[in-house]
Amino acid sequence: SLLKEENWIEEGGDGSVELARGNIEGVIDRFWYGKEEEYRLKEIYFTLCRGQTLGIVGKRGGGKRRVLKVLVGEFDVSEGGVLWGGK
Image (cartoon, rainbow, N blue to C red; front, side, top):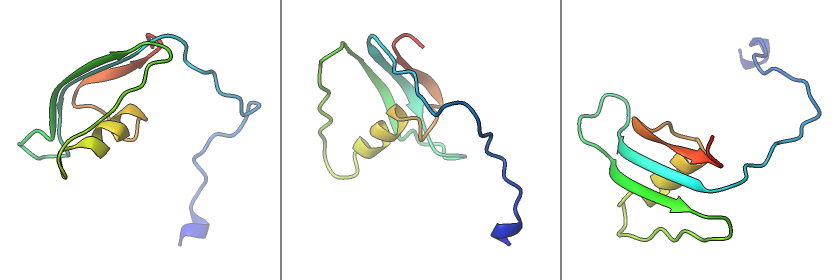
């Protein structure tokens, strides 16, 4: 049962988070789910400087939500990556 599962989350520290400074650079060469052969996202490149805003527009089912999930780290990019402040 779920309540009998061992806790694998490491606790500690003061809970503070270091905020990234600098640009956000997105390089999504290719992204797909699991064993799919068709790419879901490909060839998406952008650089956001501090204070800039990114607008993501497109048709329904075009991958806008996937791009956001890649940005926040919910999905790993198959080829490429996202750098927050050069990290």
